[in-house]
Image (cartoon, rainbow, N blue to C red; front, side, top):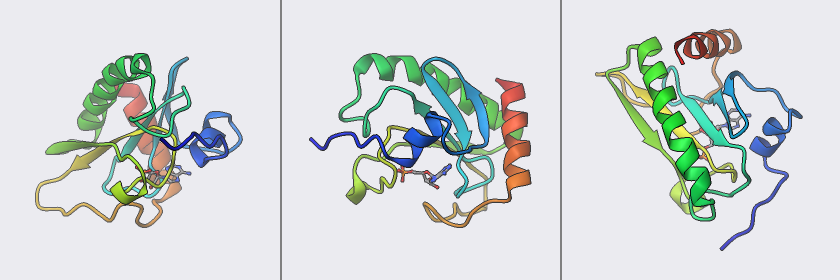
Amino acid sequence: MMTYDPSNIFAKILAGELPCHKVYEDDTALVMMDIFPQSKGHTLVLPKAPSRNLLDADPATLSAVMPLVQRVARAVEAVTKADGLRIAQFNEAPAGQTVFHLHFHIIPVYEGIALGAHGGGKADDAELAALAKNIAAKL
Ligand code: AMP
């Protein structure tokens, strides 16, 4: 199994060394907007405990984070009025993982609108800030 690299970009965001559009934070997790969203409202839930992905995560971390994933999914749905939500989590590069700190994607799906590419274009900062605030208000 590959080991955790503490210099990954999400570790730096969790340490406060890099900025993010924060939705929510508690002792165990951080929720933020994906800055290269696949659709409007694409949100990420990051457990704070260091692990590369699901494979090396502590089961206690997974138990703690899933209720938060559900809470955030409901808030994202309420704000975006999405027709559906995709929850995704990638393990290692061949599977599509690009940042090697465990995170769960909450991706709103809108009927008739194709999802953007994984890791596509950067979203407008003002729009991300507004989404983060509105989702936080619904949590
Ligand atoms: P994954 O491919 O599952 O590792 O997902 C990494 C996700 O992080 C992608 O959807 C990227 O768009 C997103 N991402 C990369 N850098 C940042 C960043 N600085 N802030 C927020 N999201 C990011």
